[in-house]
Image (cartoon, rainbow, N blue to C red; front, side, top):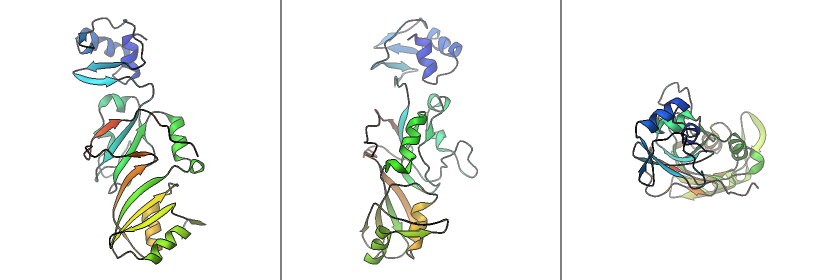
Length: 231
């Protein structure tokens, strides 16, 4: 694939802009400054350096963001900055979107991609991809509340019970809750249904992925690919 086409596919701008970056000496490969936007490269395992930053080629982007509080999972936020502002311009340019949403005050693992098929797969209830939440509650958590969440609670917009795939008390006022659905404000509404209230909410796991210990809030990393069984 031609170099300018590669840069274009990665979100660095129009083909003319990408060619200009090459002519300006802003792109290198394995320590060699590149000067021909029409130079061909095999994309498998390709890592370019663009403006001094390593940029691995991905036909489809999939990134993991450690979402901090105070950000909305929306392209057009209403009250707080968008999580998109935490990503570099090329990722925003190629149109990555959150896979599901976290509330403004919820922290933790957020996946973003420009792969529409993957978004559908990971948000479809029939695939049962588990998400784990660490919940801080206002009132003490008891065994009855845990069992009710496992047995299923009824939310106000659906007569069918909604069940936690797994649930355990963590300390006096904490819960570790695993869900395989993604209803609106689901964790908060489920906890409210057992006469408690969510004070803090953090997603610690999505499928087989966890937040790396050294990834600080507001930082992101590439995810090599999604290999979770479809279920």
